[in-house]
Image 1 (cartoon, rainbow over the protein chains, first blue to last red):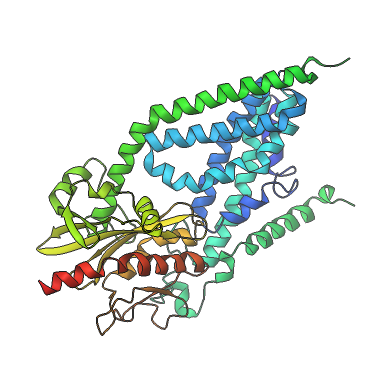
Image 2 (image 1 turned 90 degrees about the horizontal axis):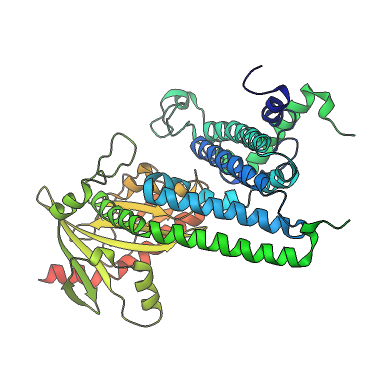
Length: 214
Length: 249
């Protein structure tokens, strides 16, 4: 027996590929468009969502037997909003620099449909430990796509990765730019995130025919 | 059988309890952390002002402030005077950097007097005049500290934003954008205030011409760039009379 039982391990690995929240469930597309113009923002967002979804799933799971079903969506919303605000305030007090980088994501985390989706579909019906794993797994699946999209958009759009000029300097014309390569400014605009996500979906489904719906 | 949690009375009690608990939790967090947060913001202002006059730890391409521990001492050392301009009258106020530019802008728009803070600093024998300005980007507020010499030629600038798009508008706080402003003239050839345009289709992407009142825009960040041009035009123009006076004396 490893650290996790087979069933528990599947909670983490499933959302990474065959049940990916973005490419299969098509959730969280909005933030995938908004912040993937550079790789660093994608990574920060992936980590933030992982923290919020992991903790939020546990909180909802602990409360699952006392939440009135009529107002459960509101309760979920309150939990995630309170969680995000508290984290934001604590960061502002003790890690001010980090909080400034994150500020733009706070709103996006609260409205992220993956979070509500996992609360509703999983945490309300499962035990805290499984819910925690499910949260981490889904956030990782989401983050993985975000990072892939961020990688290509920053590389092809700005010619940089994490801010480093990996392809040379476009103004001084060094590296690849010396032989006539140009950045594709179109990659920086949000529609291109959809196209990159579309390509990922295409590759994924052509490799695994079981995912294709009739 | 009806579930206990489906009852209306239970739902209402649950909702009330939840609001009370979450509300007090948030209120408690906010009020207990407020002093630390305010202190962080105060030091950040000092760092921003120092950054604009070139007191910073920039390396090759990234923008770095002086450390939070050193900022108060360096602020004392480099900032000689803090002025408040009110209806053309200039007075000294060593807390001028805490003036809320947003509030003063609202005062100005409402027809009341607007206090204009201006910080006078000196480094390596050169005098810097640093003004805080504020405007609107695409999603939220943007603001800046611009340092100038007595001819209103920009000596340094620090831009910041509350929520511009990462990778696009948010790049106004990157070195490549901020450094473009250094050396740019705010006045035109005949000496009247023109501001600096964040221009698309600029024929001068390396920004060699410093008297064209233009810097190169960021691709994909048109509205943020327009916001930058607009706040420079509207807010820095208010300081023009001060500089005119400075020359006449």
